[in-house]
Length: 113
Image 1 (cartoon, rainbow, N blue to C red):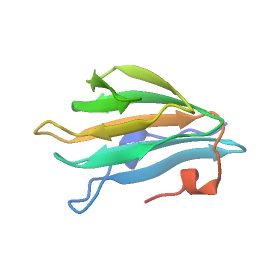
Image 2 (cartoon, rainbow, N blue to C red):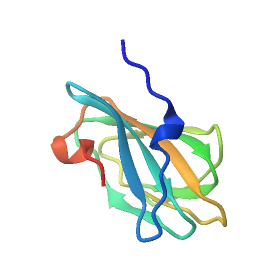
Image 3 (cartoon, rainbow, N blue to C red):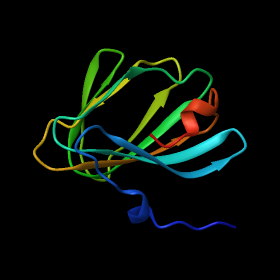
Image 4 (cartoon, helix red, strand yellow):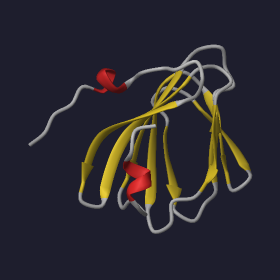
């Protein structure tokens, strides 16, 4: 058994969004993504995996296969691995997301940035 406290993984940086790994076990990983106003996650896919995203705080816009989806606290979004995903903090407050990948495509997806 392992236990973590999500607030320990919420860290903001004025230069770019942050990613902090919470767990990495086998082919699965979970992490926080933290965005200051105006920061964005570039469009990308997660081949061979499903992505589960929970909005912890703040509001922003997800673009999933060119469809915009508003995200706010306690929203949970499922994105298939072949769907193109991006996110932007379009609000005036910080945003934190909790993300789980059930199968990471490669080790790059499970590193702090």
